[in-house]
Image 1 (cartoon, helix red, strand yellow):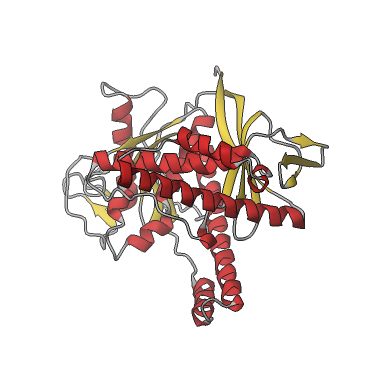
Image 2 (cartoon, rainbow, N blue to C red):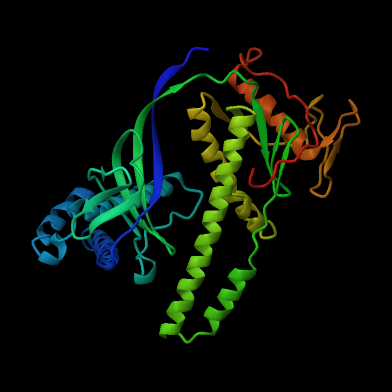
Length: 391
């Protein structure tokens, strides 16, 4: 099986370690970036209201150059400060794209409060190592360390992120990898709530329901604290840390699940092109839909399949649950009906697996409308197996 060399870009995250002074300086820099975002947004709005003029990113960089004559601003790296202006510029570009597209609220960029302001910035500094520890030197903050050697490849960008629980270094790495094409049969995946995702081979992944008992307990404690008090700030930090634990736990489970699918079944995948923002308008199902994180699953499958020599094909999701995967006949399928029974061809199958097989057939047709796709085959039909939620 011939392999080819491919340049891939990946983000590698590491837990960062700072001194007490480094943590204090990091807080000062993030507060400064939040103020910079707010004043830059104010200048853009005022220029349009008063003179009907648009202020560009480059115009604001020129102003920043003058502002950096002040020692309070020049003590930190200019790239970190420009990263806040770049984010604001991207936010405006997305805003104008939504205005042109129509059909949804444009969502003008908003001012950021001090306690929920900018929490990360980007720099381009070399990574040094002694084998046991690696570190980057950031102007005004000193040394930011992480355990082990730096990742292999060319590190093009380093992002310093402060979360509720820790500080992280996210390194954008480019490297050449040898990728052999995956010749295993294509697999279709249907996204759902009761089954987080179902494979056309018959396996299903149970749906996720977050345990919110600890979150509710901490939320109640926060609601009882006096506004503006030190105790309320402590309770708010506790709640933020608990939410961060939930996010990290779910993120790790998604990595395990998507890695298992690509490793054990196929890197050639067909998924539904779901319009999730439209689906969460259903008030009865919105929380359950958000908990399954379908978008994150598809995103992780995309780059993992690429690294494994495959690809992810998005297909139209219409009528995948109503259509028989054996004879293509359609019937009504209320959500309460969990087994698909076709009166035409006699097919009896779990409704989610049936939908996954329809997704597979549409993926095959999209890749090769004129016939069978090389390297892809029909489902193996191992119905009834269940993958654990965390793979």
